[in-house]
Image (cartoon, rainbow, N blue to C red):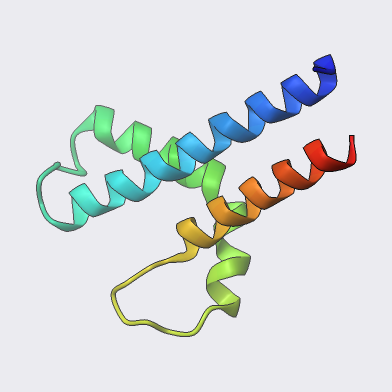
Length: 91
C-alpha cells in the first residue's frame, strides 16, 4: 500500500473514532451517567467537540429535524467511509 494512502486511511480512521467517542460521550452526559462538570470529562468533551463540530455542523444544518435524535455522526461516518473506499478504488 502506498504510504500516503496508509497515512490518509489512519487519519480518517482516528477521526471516525473521535466522532464515535463524541457521540457516546454526549449520550452519556445526556442520560446523566457522566457528570459534565467534572474537569476530566469537561476537557475531553470540549476537545472532542472542537475537533468534530466543524464537520458535523454543516450536516446538522442540512438534515431535517428529527427531534432529540441526532444522526449527523452516522452520516459523517458513512461519508468518510465512502470517501476512503473511493480513494482506494481510484489509487
